[in-house]
Image (cartoon, rainbow over all chains, first blue to last red; front, side, top):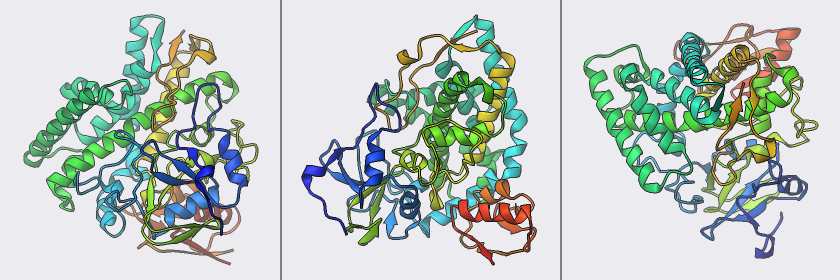
Length: 392
Length: 64
């Protein structure tokens, strides 16, 4: 086993302008025995996991918990951290099995391969309309705001059963929630408005059910209306900025390597290559556990870095090259274990339809600024682009 | 030839097996794994092994 001391502490956030993503430090960490200890801004420390095998081990070990109510759970900052299911009923990403099982069971039928395929026409319509609006406005756009955030917001609102007349409201509020430059006050207000709206929607759907997720879950009876409102908020937050970041980064990468546009293998490789949710999986040991030769004591925080795992040369040769011809399956961009992203097949569909629409309908699409001027999210929990000016 | 078994109690319905090995796995109406071919050979066997490797719930066993 390996011991550690304060002198070896590294910072938690290592992304920075001018350095590639994932941060080059991950390569160094992977070659060291044991794990690396990082300091959070709060002064707390967490173990960072960067090897693919160990990231998967952490995400499947029953002695390692996702519940922020456990002592020692990492709290990187006010906005980078998770509420517990005690704070928000239905926030099931913060539950461990067996409490987690009921939620997953209730939601699985909503995200089957068949169900997601049936959403294709709706996703195509949303993408087409977003492109229509971009084209109608002229020969340039800010893709993050005008497209990447719009599409998943509308897809989720359609999934939940938000009536079309309310979608502008829904889109506006969800954007405030995920925009890093929003103030805490703006974000709290948007969150409050959305929660109130969702609760009203649940009341309406309980009286007049429709063909949507909220209606079916109400009828299924596995979740209480209060839990369902937490679930709806969670789906909204989990499926919005993540998808938007993937779409935008993918546009930049594909425009640099146009030979891959239209190749169905690009989606999986884009997910691996960009690994936007690098810092999302926060965990705490609820018993002493050994990971990769490192003793992690009960009550110590653990952060399995998915970008580390997805760029581990033991798993993926030449990991820093974007190469859709490689077998990218096995990446952990959506996590691993019981909390693996429920909406992953919907994200794949959204990305595919988005690229087909953008590159198919706007063949002259190009980034409107030099690549080195692009504003990446170095400071957020998710990696992505603040803005993406494009023209055609 | 390899025999395939699944632990439906572990399955979390991520459907990675259905995408990786559509000839071997499917989902039932509740979204849980269903084995279509429990003795796959050739290409189907290869895809079943891929599915075993990527199943996030480690619910698939390939018996050699």
